[in-house]
Image (cartoon, rainbow, N blue to C red; front, side, top):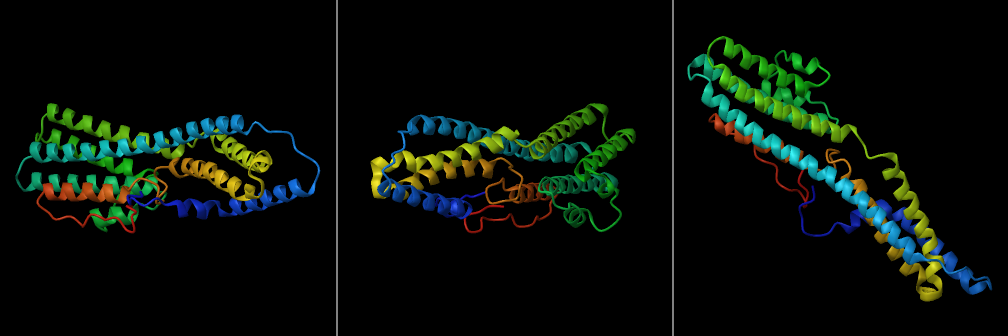
Length: 294
């Protein structure tokens, strides 16, 4: 996620420069043809076209931002539930050696869970992070299709065993179970955002109409701008292409690009908070690098 105050216009230009060069060449060709040919194209209602396109792109960007913000809200819920879950585990389980070992094991599993979920959402292998937290022993959860969900299931089973042993009562188990449900619901929402792209019309039509508008732009501006048409048309076209690119940047909040949610920062913050709750020191929380927080 970009956290610096300086606008990253160059990034948008780097992605659209080929289209802009083609647009500029087309603008120059239209301008030359206008001065050398007696033919005059009919007036185009560019204001109507531009307004309709702007509304279309605005709806698309709002839809993409809604997905991005929903992803941030779900991870905010995961942060809160992880803290509440750890607090309940530490308060409910006994303080003897066996209870303390179970407490620390459940906290470690929760840390492994959020890191595994982050890696899965970014289409990365969760095994290295899970083994870093839980050790290099046998971890059957890594054999499952959804390791993060498997870790959550394993933690629930351990708490059910604690209930059978009389370490916690059924009321306390129910309270913790509600937190597992909240975590599962948050994970399901994240997976829905990751696995459900915007409809094809939202992805293809804006690109087609934006490029069509950029082609028509110099034809409608050449009588007004004259020799300045290539510059004016290229600048106006870049504005529409930039809005189009914003929608592409925000549509997947878990794609591990500079425009996406800082999941590494969020999950490391969860790890530090949970480790400090059991009296341990956590790793340093990642800071922004060149104005980008990962």
